[in-house]
Image 1: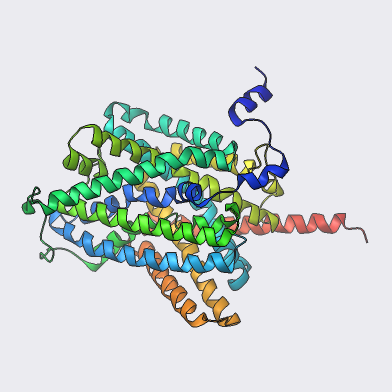
Image 2: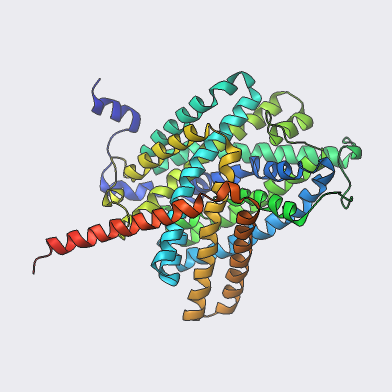
Length: 464
């Protein structure tokens, strides 16, 4: 079989440029393809909080409730802030475009570089977490998790090379099944709590004195919980993928995602505390929770199966947003122009393939260990969070449109909280995130070198 025959089999027939409009997303499909990263973080965000608190002991687990409330406050601020960004910059680009226009070239490149790396980490963390959920249900597969993770990256990459609408159609069912599974878990779990089927002795009472607890440790637990907010910015980067009116459809999808994420995160966090779940290396918190609520029956495997699916498919958020961000950077000549070229199925195939290769390399390098990747993953997204909110503050102060005071307050709160979380990350997890201080300046330097190359070539080719 020839290369072209294999390509047609895997990717499908080439599409004509006039069919591009058919590749735009409606709100239902967009919610699946662009929110899977944020929604899937419910599977590991609460667990990261408990892992930090477990260093003190189970008696400290009641602090997960106020920490969860803090994460929900930050989520609300981010949703309101990105809502304004979408309306202000409907051409997409998110934090990169906002930072470049309002804070300057280097701020834009820092935001853009952070997000490019973060989308690679999105794919690596999502696939690795999905593999962990799979091996929790089937421990015999644990030794093969790296191979399984790499094969899953290749599968998602091929799915995206087939086109945006085709990948969205395939992703919609698992994402909504995951939401149904988690809502079912939360509702039945709360019903068991309300009817007294769960002993109050399995968890410490709220307000219990905890010897050895410190502000440093609580801030570290809070920053770990903020990993549940990664992926919130993806919709603002991909506004151009929506059907018209694109900005309004994007905002409605963003708000829907925020509401669903808040319900799932708070539900899992509360039940994990009430059922006295203790994080284990060999079994995820969601797996333990489902096991206690349902027992090891069909409902348990439904929850585990949909959790594994959405964690794997959450990688699709990276495959959707990375190529579009790469296009914005390539148009501005900061990365090679090849990223602006559309493939046979009218997707930006060079960006898709680059992301797939980089993600596989990262999974192999870290042996699929999500706990080592998540701090880098979270800090990589809070840098653009902070820059984009600060950029919007500058925009409102400069332009002063109607109602700008309320918009200014919203973005100020968003930037203040994001910056605070960023400082907490660097203070409490410096040993895990210090690499950002090296590779981010190198990426910005590389952007400038590529831009200078294009400028010099342009001078040589110019006809006087």
